[in-house]
Length: 361
Image (cartoon, rainbow, N blue to C red):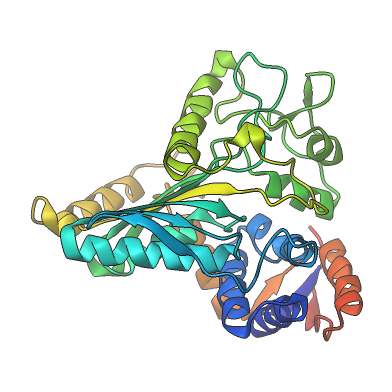
């Protein structure tokens, strides 16, 4: 598979977003969001998403020059209009505002309407963690989850993320969809030409499918936990919680009213998002030490397989980032690179430069 230097991947994403009409500052911010996902190994939310954003800008769904506006606020809360801006533009504005409020009064809770896709939820919670705060972030999305006992999709992947600092520069980072997998991971399997695992999605006949093309077209992901007998209703309930935090507080569209997931949509999605920062210093002393003790306890548990140590939330991504940074390159599926070489020609930017080819395993 093609190997691309980290700097080259960043260059290509920035230039592509600028070519589509984004200001350089916002293109850089959005490229950083996508690059983070690729570096930590979540390719579903990295460059894989670039063409989607480019198309949204070209079709007028996303307004790359728009800046968010505060509609109402208190010392601890804010209601914001994202004005259909880029995901990184809105995310940075809202999490920075939540961080500012948390530093001033202990907590900042920001709900925002008229949003576009904002990438990995964990990217935003890490912004707060780096400031010594607990960060949380949520977003609703287009309807791709089939609620327990239902036939049709009505909820989104509706991710949940929380990040918190620990002693010695350590941290805990929870970042997960409330479906068994994000739709972007289905797309990655399509690009790889590989099946999806049993239990991710239903086909049009209501039975599980391992065909990623069928899963993408049908858009019926199972909730986290799968079917009712394996507690899938818990994933459904978590998704509904995110919905209330996002559309309920912000006044955005509820998931069942959001346009279907598409690379050619012309209707702005009006997603709802939520950004939270909490100062642990307002509570019991020793927060970072207690978090560190929990992390080490989990990591030191005896594993079932000695070759697979127990990981704390965030360890896998941290390990992936170390490997990627040390190597200096990101390995992409061949079909993804080919797709972006065609896009480069279409929008008039220099194509991706490949530095090496890895053998597929």
